[in-house]
Amino acid sequence: MPKLNENYLNLKESYLFSEIAHRVNSYASAHPDKKIIRLGIGDVTLPIGSKVISQLHEGVDALANAETFKGYGPEQGYAFLREAIVDYYMRNNIVIEADEVFVSDGAKSDTGNITDLFDKDNVILIPDPVYPVYVDTNIMNGRNITYIDANAENNFLPMPDHSVHADIIYICSPNNPTGAAYNKEQLKEWVDYALENNAIILYDSAYECFITDETLPRSIFAIEDSKKCAIEFCSLSKTAGFTGTRCGYTIVPKDLSFTASTGAKLSLNAMWNRRQTTKFNGVSYIVQKGAAAAFSVEGMAQCKENIKYYQENARIIAEGLARKNILYFGGINSPYIWFECPNNMDSWDFFDYLLNNAQVVGTPGAGFGKNGQKFFRLTSFGNRENTIEAIKRIEKLF
Ligand code: MLT
Image (tube, rainbow, N blue to C red; front, top):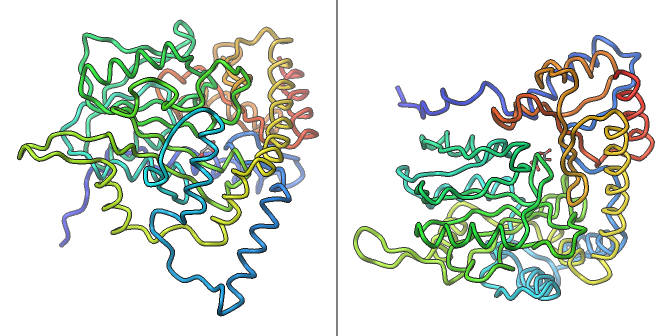
């Protein structure tokens, strides 16, 4: 009999968004006449911009001709896309090199897969509430997690406790689920803490495109010395509407190295390259053509148009909650609005209440950790009509 990875026994029975889909599908089958508005999972609804679409078509056409046909591509991503990403960072005054960029099918996979590079015995520091992938993938590997509280008192932006040691620190800013975003000084404190502890920051910047406050950093690499202690994950899912198309990237600085127990220097860039070349065969040429177009000046301008639309949805949701005096966070530099459940309800109870009484689907805060027990997340990625209708229905209930 095979010995199974019994760490799976320590996971919740199903992944958060699978559980939500299951509950919503059961409700929908029992109530086929009801119009359900889905503002749960952060899935985009607007079509991809024309610049990207034309490049996706070009990618398809290239495969139709022997002269331009592509088989396996480089596991790390085509040079044209890695360079387009470097250029995008450069336009934000951040210098990275193309061989520090690894293209992938998304930040979800990479934030999970990065755990391959680390031993089981590390002190893993994860904020609570948090995107459940960071927690679940560490549990799958049998790691213990030290949680750091994010709550209304610290505006959901916890700062390091210098008396506590950590080896690996997860940060997501702008944050999923709370929408809170660190400023430069706060991130600098995290970088200093990581350097003090000889630790590494795993920085998820999947929502950087939603930053409207120009003073806020869009990347951990906007912070001095961060290349000595951080890996950044980003995604085109929300930036360019690629939730279904799938493309993301991870930046592993070449400066990032640690001393092994043998005394040898281990480069994280070389290790990630080794991991990817072994376990991953790259993203399709077609998708990479489209992704490169998204990073062009014209392509990014089109992405920003879609983002503006979602930001207006966020404003509509936030204003509705404010009219009802419901305490909320996020929605300004983020597509997520994180609010206190009315009447002191628990978040799963509120989820069921909202589904049954308003046919609006959100995400219960408890799914992101214990500090989300009394909170609820709505996404601004719905269409305008549904967003307005959802907030009207919610306002009617309270
Ligand atoms: C979310 O709703 O939290 C995200 O869409 C999930 C993801 O990006 O995987």
